[in-house]
Amino acid sequence: MGGAQLASWVSAGGNTVLVSGPVGIGKSTECAHAAYSLRDERIACHVPVDRLTNIRRLTADELLQVIGGRLFQLAVGHLGFPADHPLSASFPAHTLATGRDSFRASTPTATRLLLDEVARWSRQGRVALVIDGLEKLPEGPTALEIFDALASLPFDVDLIVVVPWHAVYGRSSDVVLRAGERLFVIPPLETRGEAGVAAAQFFGAMLAHRVLNPPHELPADFQRLLGRAFIDSGGVPRTLLQIIADAATYARVNRGDAWPNDDDIELALGEQRDSLRRLLAPGDDLAIQQATGTDGRELERERKIRLLANGLLLERPTGQGPRLDPHPLVPLAA
Amino acid sequence: MIVPTPTQVLVNALERDRGGLAIVIWPSLELRAWLIDEVAALPAMAEGGGAVVVKTVDDALSAGDRPVLLVPEDERVAVDDLDGSRDQFAERSYPLVLFLYRDGDGERLLPFRPSLASWARGSRVDPDQLAEVDLDAERKRFFAEVGEPPMTWLEKWHARQVPRDGAGYARAYWAELLCQP
Image (tube, rainbow over all chains, first blue to last red; front, side):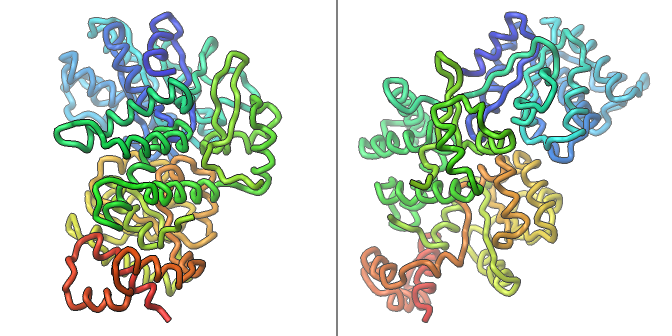
């Protein structure tokens, strides 16, 4: 599951895609990839909302302002859209120039107009909005207003939206944004078998590119440690990178070594275990053990959301539906 | 099992990521003041014009690209705002250190703020963990790593016979903690 698949779904006519997954799984990377993959068919606007404002104080109007501002900047930068376009006055916090023919409207109206204008100016004739960062949206009336604001955007605008778990496991409505929407849950990478070896090699090549100048092959012993850390990361990229970065820092600080050894990896893994342990609440041990190997339908909703969002339980697709397993570093009671 | 010292964890947390986050847990207001001074004195905090102490996430964002010690007046608000604004700190070059009261409002909120908790994973520093450490075993470990007892090494450090780099400071704090009665 990746950005190319999200883009393929949109290309095939599925105009509303919801994206979910645990922290650190690579949702932002996949969103950026999806926007890139769509560039020939759509004017794809990637809106990393969490980089632009505080999600926990976000309102529906502010979200549309952020989207409009980002789209405006994209149009000016890539389509030759005039910086003093009349609609610049409707997105004052995100545009620089205001022309003589300036036009002010409510944010929903101005956003709709801007989407029309950008589609008209573009070679592709169609806009896709890739909206990232909304997984941190608190549950409540404001979140519903925000989903309503997105749902009210013109139907010919494609939407790829990262949504919070509480929307995925909603209390009542089956629809979060639009009828026909499709949910993609980004799963952890496979850590075992051929796929696991290939993924570990990919990360090895990426690290070699990042830290070795000029890039060359990583020392064999480090590759072995990387393979071990990859399995312990549960296939969660951020966790793997944190383990490797921690271990490398321990090697540097404690011994002045450039490469970590088994003890450094063990220190780093211990830190991860400790952090994960602190996220566990009373009753989680039993709930995780009971949910292991199932699709999690028996888990109580609030607990399920917390365990999945924190990556304490990892969901992987199988031929028979999703399957839950504890993160390998979660220290469960025997 | 190998257990890192709080200082190792802190130095590691500050050096792990460009613009990383460390959470320092404080058990009392008196110790909080001491910890703020200790953290501010670390070499990683002297870069970028020196550390600034702020009370809110908005102040941290407007402090510019420099080391920030976030000592919140209201921990719930700070944890919420930091969770909601995490990616706005992504382009920073210097660390952010968040001070939270042990088992206080902010720390108890962390499991419900997965984004922030994930960012800080492996970077939680609790000085009180030292109380759980076997000091004799740690002193032996220090000797095995450094080749001399903590006090002997510390005398050289104070005499400036040891380079003042990140590894040196980390070892100095470790030695000082092991020299406590």
